[in-house]
Image (tube, rainbow, N blue to C red; front, side, top):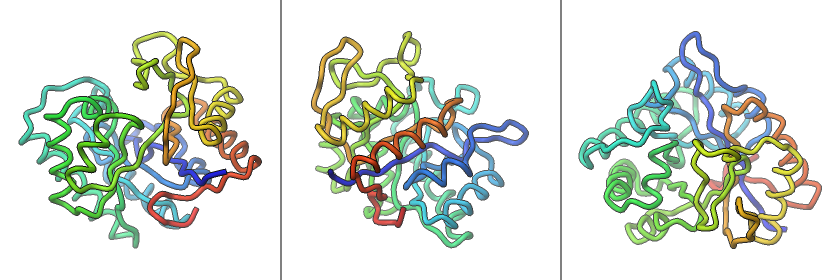
Length: 256
């Protein structure tokens, strides 16, 4: 069985509003996509998540987003390329400073929500994000939707890409994520999710919403940290993969 990374979106609590169980998730995952304040997260909470991740040796990624606290970064935005580039640079830089203060570092970038889905297919916004990452540090890896055009664009520009699959999301026959506005877009059956991910790692395929099997090459599996059953899903996925002989390790080389 090949090795795989298990990641989750963390650091998303904001002031008095708590989201997810970062401590529990950090005991399970190998990589943490940490909010940078644009879609979620406040400085103190982000710092606490980074400190907890550093203590566990979990790899850190900048979870950059559109400036959309109200919509949790899940609303499409027609942000001009120059502004988007600056926004992404700003977010990575902020997280780098916080990470350095607790003895860890940012080793990759994963766009969030609507930005993630947009740049998977849109060459203009993709180019802005790619340039932003290159300007900050060309050694940073970029997490991309598996099988998306973004992988080719980013690779051609000189970035190292990480192809990502989603444990708790349904897929279309085209290999894209089913829109959250549609029924069945988010999966909740823990055992079903775990079996889907085991099949993905073992056979390189995933079942789509209409029952087809499509090829999906992935280096990392994401479990959304804001789901009510996130910890249970992540724990079960990890357990099933380990039972099958899969090695779980961060794609950055950080220890699990």
